[in-house]
Image 1 (cartoon, helix red, strand yellow):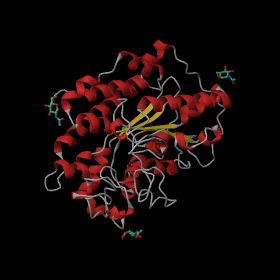
Image 2 (cartoon, protein in one colour):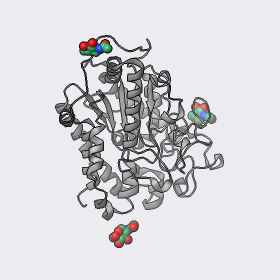
Image 3 (cartoon, protein in one colour):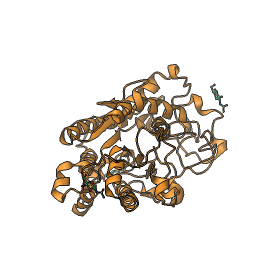
Image 4 (cartoon, protein in one colour):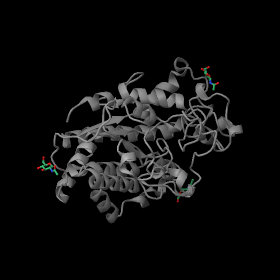
Length: 376
Ligand SMILES: *[C@@H]1O[C@H](CO)[C@@H](O)[C@H](O)[C@H]1NC(C)=O
Ligand SMILES: *[C@@H]1O[C@H](CO)[C@@H](O)[C@H](O)[C@H]1NC(C)=O
Ligand SMILES: *[C@@H]1O[C@H](CO)[C@@H](O)[C@H](O)[C@H]1NC(C)=O
């Protein structure tokens, strides 16, 4: 395997947006945290949940964009609380829905789906956009999306809006106690690495991009509690089984790449924890959690491990899910909802694992429940 340049790129980008030494160079605007807190709902364990990512956590961003990557029609959402499509790429809830409830928060609204009033955003905002990757153009053949850097910019705008409304101290307190959930990266692999490994060299960061990243340092704006999600084993997704699979076995070449990526991410999180002792960053390995489900599918009640519930072709992995007639009648015994995304039932299990490792340990060095209990 050639040196994985995408992996280097990722490590660079993710560590840059949290990098404390960069923050010092640029002149940190972080301030000491006063005892007086922001308004926080009595049921909630943290003030807010902010989400950045791709289709694994998009809850409606792409409904407002010109793109084929959208989930705003049935059968998407048919098993969601409202039984309506919302933009979530699943039959029901996505992991961050389950986690919001665990944290005592309402479902987090999408940034483009709300009116921009501080009161609608104060318990969190979801900036995630299907197709988004770390590289600007990842996923652009499907149409528009909001890239990682644009999502961070939107978060920075929200932060400024909070300051105007509540003042700097309360905002800093709110953000530093809130959970920041980052689930992105798979699209860079899907759109660049998988089609043609030899072109990846051309994607190196231009210097200006790097500068831009540094100026949007999340640590600088008091982000402290971070959940960094690893990549899921997409080598087992129906689309890749259809494209490359033999006898429904997961595509090992793809999964090896994911394993390598997750290994490095986990190591990077350990380094960041040492470098930023007043932060709390955890890494949750979607690969481990998902492989546990696939391998022990009978225990979890999944009869279908290779076939998506909705789609067309072998494993329903050929054509994307676009109409109710393409869907199975009951998704609860399926692992995969469509050619790339898991069902609500799987998302519930994964969220439980992120929360407290209920079924299998996925998060390092601790689970989300323990992270939010830690006072910084
Ligand atoms: C903000 O916090 C700092 C440090 O605790 C304090 O000196 C300052 O007076 C506070 N500002 C406001 C507007 O409360
Ligand atoms: C990848 O790129 C190489 C060299 O540019 C080319 O020969 C090959 O056909 C490409 N493969 C795909 C799948 O596009
Ligand atoms: C789907 O199947 C599960 C398990 O057999 C059952 O509990 C559930 O009610 C079914 N859902 C629908 C919509 O039929």
